[in-house]
Image 1 (cartoon, rainbow, N blue to C red):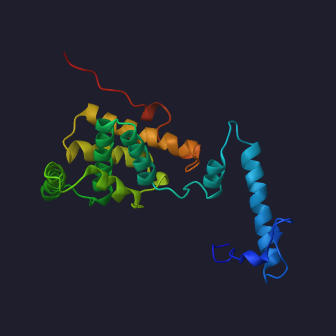
Image 2 (cartoon, rainbow, N blue to C red; image 1 turned 180 degrees about the vertical axis):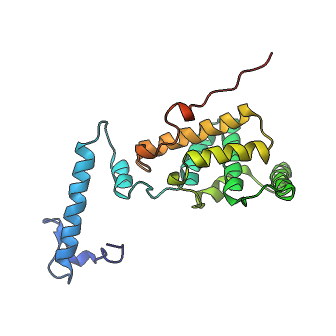
Image 3 (cartoon, rainbow, N blue to C red; image 1 turned 90 degrees about the vertical axis):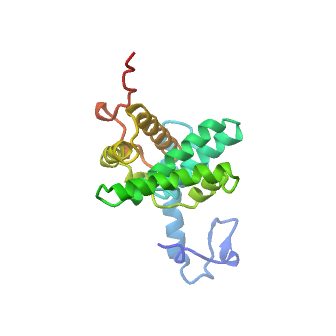
Length: 218
């Protein structure tokens, strides 16, 4: 049932009985729907191995993609760093999600023109920040509204292609790329804990996706 199918006025709700009154033309259908959801809530609660909050239950009811995008979870984490005074980490993480946005907007072919455009956009953000024309928190507010990436989209193929993008387009070293993947993994773990995405979709499991820092040559 869609949101419009499950809508009803307050006058049609029976508080004591906890169900829709017979005054609503679709009261039977709505009450059956509510009963089904209550059973799902009970199943989630009693089958959870750990303590689960109402917020987590709500996310699980919405399905494996939940209601939050990758960028929404990322900006919450960045905002938390900012609020606790860890500004350098917050700025670094914001830079990473800008890189991810460039990656998902990228065409399927490597072009020197595209690489140059990416560099110019990054330089412009830095320049405007120095001139006080742009505050990095503007980026946080921007990404809160960005729905272009869901956690289900982040699979092993996505990670592999993103690593190539960081190396080929951003000219990043292995250690820098690893730092970005660790940040992505952290966000994925947060999303699982909050019930935004199911554990079975976790793309960092196993030896293939084990993230290690490259050896330092002395």
